[in-house]
Length: 186
Image (cartoon, rainbow, N blue to C red; front, side):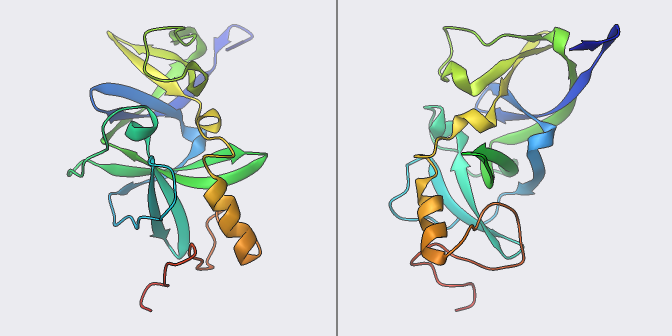
């Protein structure tokens, strides 16, 4: 994007899934956590690995490798959880995304971002904002708001309704748990 002849730079957090490099707009990222214990939740899609307790708030965690048709993310010293804010049905949902490793924060201008490819990717192209280029490598820039449908996150909504209100719109001091999970220390 150019404004009066000046390239506007956008920052992206890059991370690795397998051998591929992906990126998220930094404005969608709250923080990056070392891998912590993830509690599995029954009757959720395969790519939903479970939930974590983040400062007293329950945050769902997805395995992006499974979402993209890859093998499940394996635990390593570099495995991390990227805490993001996703827009689903005009609501902000806090969501953790597993990554093999976080790389760096990049500044990319619009001129270095190509449209998503129409073929040749295992991802559905509506998940891709564009292809960033840095030196000799391509970076797949994801549109995290388009990656998860209402159906994908239906269990979050059902839990909210059962508990009388939203759980994941923002990180708050209240401690709430999915049905069947006891509070920590119980």
